[in-house]
Length: 250
Image (cartoon, rainbow, N blue to C red):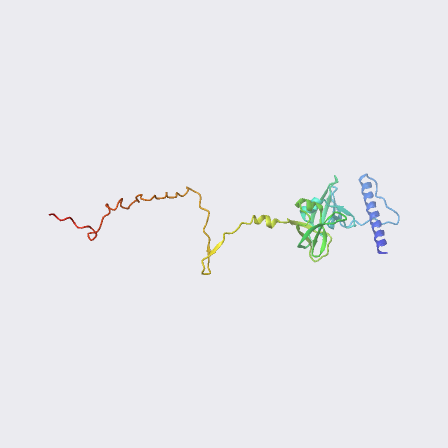
């Protein structure tokens, strides 16, 4: 029963929207507005017209479109919603210029809550979802492609604070393995030798600073004279006590 009532309500709203669109087209052609017997003209509450002929409509963002005061859906560009990080419930203002261009502006952001989840993909619809706070949130495809996110990446999303929502706005992406990549390669630390007293002593450093290589002294051959030492035993100076006695004259 509830489903049938909802269907009838949607049909009535669609008929009213079509009638309003037809009346606007007639006015643009200079034809007086048509009145259908038994049907009252729709209220223009929330819809303004400027002297230049532009139409200004205020509505609420539902995560993908703007819902006007008459219940009509207005398509919001996905790139704009993604870059502006629009959250379900934000108040928007749509300006339809005389040439037909749509200009959106955020005029009433709702209070936000930042949560961290994991990016997943619906196997049936192939749409992206974010698993956070034990539930799945819908996210715009434009946000996922902008951050080049992949399934399994951590996602920082914005949701209305204290209000249940179906959609979430992607704020940032944390790539899988980003911490490991930033840490760099693992380097083995030098071993420590124990001195036997219980205190660890650092091992000798192997590397030397760059510069001229250290010269290794040449080995000294046996019998060669060493600088600063007597060349032979005869040339060595003895103390008076060690000197041999002088020969006696006969």
